[in-house]
Structures are given as structure tokens and as C-alpha cells.
Length: 253
Image 1 (cartoon, rainbow, N blue to C red):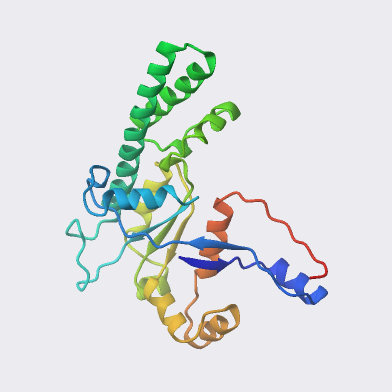
Image 2: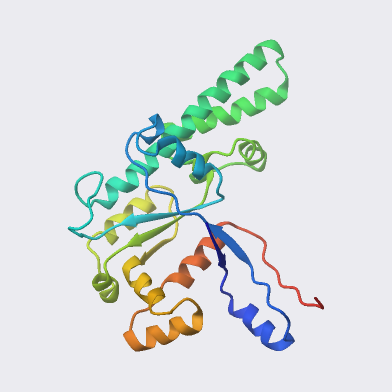
């Protein structure tokens, strides 16, 4: 797990004005290994992956979208749409497992004690079941304030916000061209939408290896190589997706 500072030009200006010790906003990023088809039934890392996902507030979904003969893909060929479909479907399947259990327990409660509070919760969960039947995630459906309050008590995996990071080659990133980007964008738009950010993991690693670990040294690397890091954009958009309150304070330490 890595603690990441949130870049914010407004914060830097305030620090220059007030000359105080800087305490930056942060969030934690945990690297979770990929998911294979059948994970909801325990294949691959299966339940371990899905339990890790349940502990986070949002997801960066990294999509591999370039050919590299040195890397073997689980499905054989590089096909980002397959990868997107696998994650999308397996997450729904895992949520359905929990959903069916919760609905069964509520049915038992209502049989013994038919109180309105149980019936209201059951109504919301039945609506979730309809959403899954349409192939949608919880986050992509329309919910009332009361329904959201019930949903928050169940921590559905598919209720979490997603930012899609499309990993392309250095050459493609420099040219801003990749044969899969159009299809990936179309898939995202038809599956609830969300931010999509092309980037080059190899290029970013070269930048870090060359010393580009902060804004100043990263700018030097970019000026000397022409590479434009996407790291700050990735961090900012990921932080924004969490819908957290954001404010600044200044005072004596």
C-alpha cells in the first residue's frame, strides 16, 4: 500500500503565502492482482481478490491495451474488452452471492416478524437484483436518498466508483494513438460511464527511475525527454471520484 499526496496548485499557493508546515491531503493506493474468469467461484486469486476489493472505497481499473510478446495473457490474446467484461461480470456474480443470502435472511425475518423496516430493505434488495439482471452495477442505477441509505449498509462491490486506466505502449502514448481506445471508450459508456485515462506504465517507470518522483524532478525529465507524465492527472481524477469533502486550513502548529 502506498500513501499518495494529492497534487493541488491552490494548496501550493497558500503554502507560499503563509509559510507554514505543509500537511497535504493523501489517499492510500493498494495494488491488487488481476481477476480471472470464474473468480467469483474461487478460481485464481478469487475470493482473496474480492475481499481486498471490499476493503477499498474506489477502484483504478488498469486495462492492458498493447501487444508485448514477453507477457503472456490469461485469455491468450490481448483483448481489453474481454478483460473489462470479466471484471464487470465477476464483480456482479460476487455481489449476487451476498444479495441472495441477504434476501433469504430477510424473508425469514419477515415471516417471523413482518415489520415495515424489513420489508423496506427487502424492496431495495429486490431492486438491486433487477439491476444485476440488466448487467448493470449498483453504482450505475438511479437510487433515492432512502434507497442509498439501505445500500450503504450492505457494501456492494459494484457500488464503488471506478476510474479506468488504459495501459498502452510508450510509442502509442507519445503519438496519442492506440487501436483499442475507441472500443474501450464505447464499452465504458455503455456500462455506466466513468473517467478513462490512457497512460504508459513503462514510460512512468522510466520517469521514476530517472528521479522523477516529485513535480519538480518530473518536470525536468519531461523537458529533457518530451514524455508527459499522467501521474498527477490519475491521482486527481481518482481522488475526485471518491466524492470527498475538500477544504484548506492554516494556523499555528
